[in-house]
Length: 174
Image (tube, helix red, strand yellow):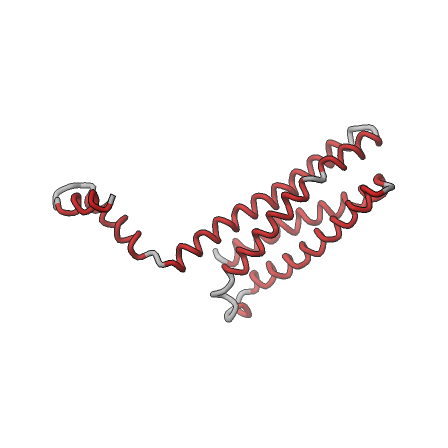
């Protein structure tokens, strides 16, 4: 590929020269730090998709379970709690990649109110998700109907917090 780019660059009248020259210069100027940042940004978006996807899925599955008889609804909710694992993996990806992506901003964090709000909301979200995990464990050990009923408003709250985190991120980097 490099030889091909070099050959094209040797032809001054070729219309693709500028495109390939700019591409070659772009590739040469990417530092390891920039490549790592891009990898972490992709990881961050994958984590967001997994976490938000799990939250929205749980919302819709909760609505669907209301249409079932109580015994079937409990079985259904118990089997769909596997989505929590996807949400936990997404949250872990978000926290790991977010920690890396935050490194250039720690010193100026006090000047970024939306980023401060985002970080506070992330802490609240983590605490709520830990609580949800405990409630699901209790539901699986007995009196599932009582415990799963606790999750409905908390699940809606976590979805609202997740969307608020995304809005704060957009406002921070807008």
